[in-house]
Image (cartoon, rainbow, N blue to C red; front, side, top):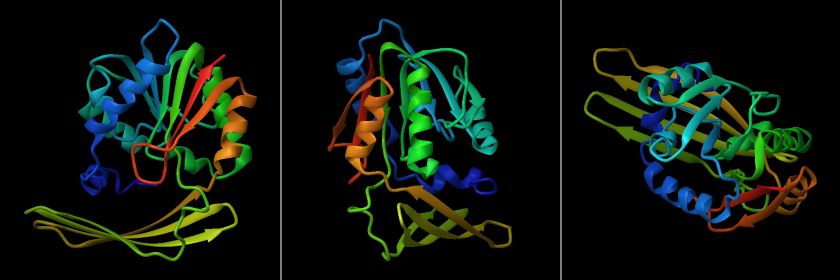
Length: 235
């Protein structure tokens, strides 16, 4: 996803308050982290917007499966190490004091089997006393299947309109995204993307975190409405 659209990603999500979100994340790290180090891994880091506000306090590494997004992150965020990796199978051969997986990136693993592998992977990359903070996608009870969505970006030299449909198939939410992009002195471009994200229930998510050695809790008050946050401390 976001291969041809990677260069427009930050415009599409220009409404997102990355600085405010990281202010809250830093407070949670201060509250929950018990390890002594300061090394942070941002899994599914995208274009690195969260890392812009983390690199002043932590030794940061960002990883993402999408090489186009990483190329943008490398250009825009200096002083951070970036690597391409799949969160389900990654092996970075080191441990961190903090692991973040934000903006519902965890939903892209789709299934509970992959979720368990991913959370185990997070635990294996975490130092004893370290903390993992995961911002999930929605649960099935919150996901509003059938509701249409629209996001727009309006600047003098570029206009973006994204409309989406919302469907559900068992434990997977399906969002079909339709993009129209008009730039100065260019023909209008049209893209279609299909996003599939797992709808993971809170009790099962916490069960899997505890199973792999993370003392887990769910915070209802998260970064974006209806999503919450999972906190896990390595035993």
